[in-house]
Image (cartoon, rainbow, N blue to C red):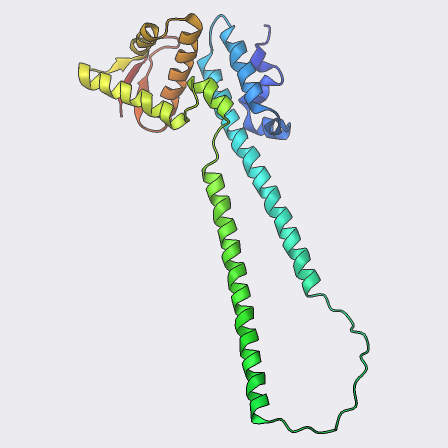
Length: 247
């Protein structure tokens, strides 16, 4: 049998996260690769929603892997720079011979001189403690900033626009479909089906290409809501209508 396009490189890498990491596809233009993948899928006589969902999940994992790798490299570079600065600041050097002026063998220190020396030593100690405290606060601040950057990491806007039809987050897309399904079930008093939701899309989308993209977005939203324990999906046979209910 002739292989499908998703069974051939480079699209086959979107179906296996580990394979994609080994082939360094994570550092390619993921948005362009995913866009070409869905464009080819739309030209198929029968859209394979399962393969589309796997490709989308893999691309999201690869993008997260890409961001994590870059942050890890930056952390390693900063550690090396700090270590080099520490070595340079604590490196021992042999001072040059200084000419010593003639001094008496014994000197008598006054009480004022003793107090001034003690005061200088206390001030120097406090200054050193303040420097260490500021360095520690700076390190904690940088660490917190890195954590916030990781938590705010999202998919590229090009990929979000391709999936959702506009520059909205994946969470907003899922919540939108969940609210529509919940409202439909509460209004009708019975569970709904995939074909019922497909009819809603047919009524809302005037163009054929728009309906195809809407079908893909809806199906992927159902998959993520099901794995997130918000919906239950039941299907007796492949390529048949399946029942949707609130968990």
